[in-house]
Image 1: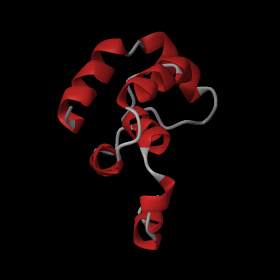
Image 2 (image 1 turned 90 degrees about the horizontal axis):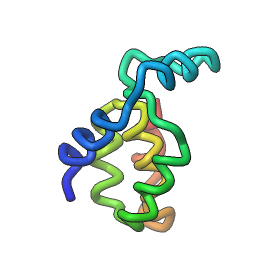
Image 3 (image 1 turned 180 degrees about the vertical axis):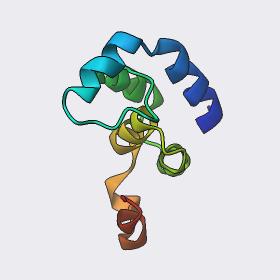
Length: 87
């Protein structure tokens, strides 16, 4: 499973209605697909812990990909340098 294949999956799951809902909570939706957290958690459960994939998803800059990265990353593998990339 690659970051690009996950992005394609996420894009196909997105909805304009959910994006509009996200913007109500001051979430920048310029790079978001509009996917519920429930669906993201289901995907994370299927993937399991995967530090390398989490890093790749984070670098995409996509809102949902970054949330998914947080769900699947291995906390013991996260470095201080990686934490500084949060911006």
